[in-house]
Image (tube, rainbow, N blue to C red; front, top):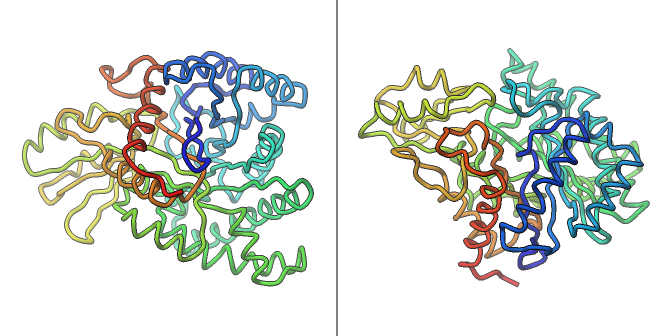
Length: 405
């Protein structure tokens, strides 16, 4: 879906349970036309936010890629962004912290990402840039000491630099600009946007200057420009909201530092304001306590006082009257603001979309509510209807704002 200022809106197909390429292609053929029709754009050109597991990407060989490209063209779809965060199984079995496995310390993660970029390059329409989002290096709780975590950051950074080199050489050869968009997530090694910026300035740029001086003979300014083009931020609104970060301040800081947002993931978290009916609110939260995904909780105890829980069960056990507010990493439907006595961070989405309309900071917007099959029963609606409703909701909100041209 094309928006103002040549911006593209889609949804991430990690919503659909599929691990093999045949399963993935089957789901795309089933849902993409239906979603587009229900969104009111029957037969219109529509972008796809493609998710391929490692297995699917291995099975998507040259023959299958040609078949897929033919189907996309025939049916008026195009791929412009991919989600390379979940490597393995993502539905119907316990995922939890394994969503980070293998992490960026591993050659497997690097090889998977490079393979995805090779496939994205073949799928991209002529003249378009391509984006792949990825994990925040690793999972913080896998490292028992600060020294171990620092070593993990350094090793991961070297692998990220290998990706940057591949993308730079690809652009020099073909003219196609591809970028890797790193997605901070609560309890990731890069757990929020502040930590991403610190990593970018304290590790990526300094190590990158040395790396590209040796590999390509670049001067410091040239190396930094290369990195800022090919290594970007995936701005997930849910994740930023869970960390209580200020959107205006973050986007201003990113702009000042020349760090680019490669993709905006439009997503909402659960929010709970405590004070009255606390027992009932905790009971209602229990309906969202499911065993597949990690649902990190950040409790606000007062100004600048936060307490983090790695998942919902320990947060539910340790709730007390000192807790003023909770933000829960549970991607809930964008178009619903209230769930009984619970709320969503929908207002964060509206804030970001307003800032985006005033000064677009990326060309790619991707709706990412992947929890439809683990929502409480009364919220589990028809999949195509739910996805299209989210896309229409985002377009409707943007229509209220005047884009700066």
